[in-house]
Length: 144
Image 1 (cartoon, one colour):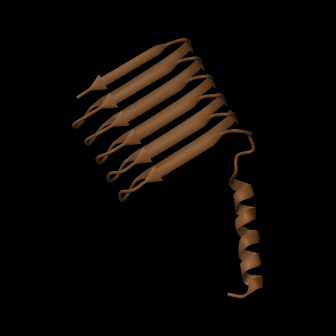
Image 2: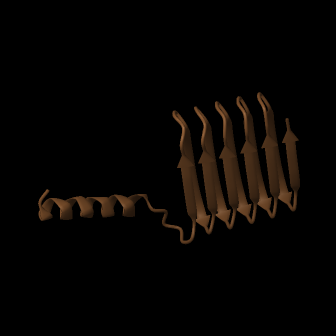
């Protein structure tokens, strides 16, 4: 490639990065996927939200949506055919989902301030659905 081609490619990459970078300061998304056919989706609106998704196995799906300020979300899945969908509205909410094995489903929703959800599922075929509305709610689900 010529220098001119490198410059055009660099400018195009910079333009695409600017177009896809969230306009809200301090928000953060981190995704790592190692196995085949894993998929994720995410959306953030607000400031200083943090979303981390890790999937290692096969055919895992994860979706994280955050609206507000200083919400924290971590989804880690190993195994296969696990699904997680987490939604946060408000301020200072925390959710952590860990799924091992296969065939698990976790759905969480938080609307308020200072809520916390923890979901741990192992082996196979567990389903968890948690909704929190208000302030200061804490939910922990452990299934084997």
